[in-house]
Image 1 (cartoon, rainbow, N blue to C red):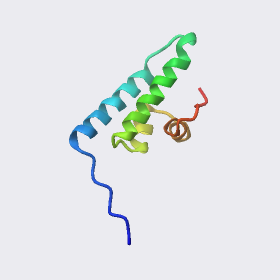
Image 2: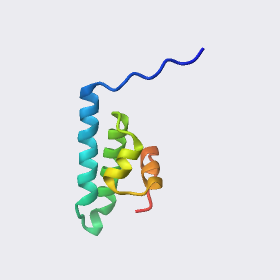
Image 3: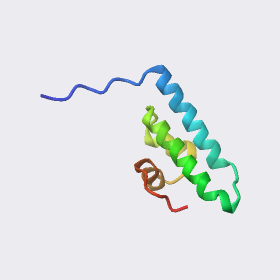
Length: 83
């Protein structure tokens, strides 16, 4: 028997996902000093994971943040990116 389709995300969940995506985009496009770069990237990756967990698909994240697809896939898996 096939699994039932996943329910569509609720409006509040989708809204918070979009807010997390906005936060990830802001972190990506603002400058950070060299000493804070690692923390900056970690916060951005956490925000991308939170947006993805709330219903934002990977392609939208890739397009909005402006990273390569492989970097976004690594970040969503929780692996360190090449930055």
